[in-house]
Amino acid sequence: MSSKYDYNRNGNSNSGFALGVLVGATVGALAAMLFAPKSGNETRQQIKDLAGKQKDKLRNQWEDTKINAAIAVEEGKEKLNRFADQTKDVADQYAEKAKGAVEHFKDETTATADEFQKRD
Image (cartoon, rainbow, N blue to C red; front, side):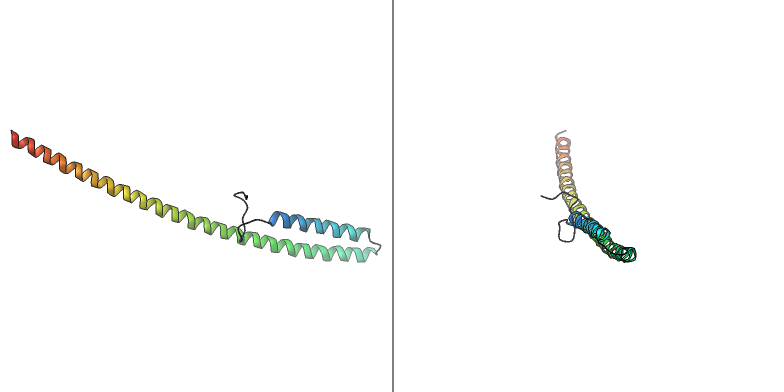
């Protein structure tokens, strides 16, 4: 069962899991580089390369999140508009029924009043 906050294009959310995997992989790779027997220059270059790759991955994930949010907003607007239209239709139907009932009551009242006037 998903919560109201779980959403992406497919209707489910894996972004939290993906972020966890991304952070875990980054920490693991960084730890492996720091404990590997390499020169300081090589290690710094590896860290710089890894940081650049992770930056690109995070940028892509951010863009996907923005797109998913925009899609969710548009879908929400569409649903709200459909609901508003349905509500207006129902209100119009009840207004027509009420108008008919008032007209019928008016006609009956006029007929009754006319009948009493004829008796006098």
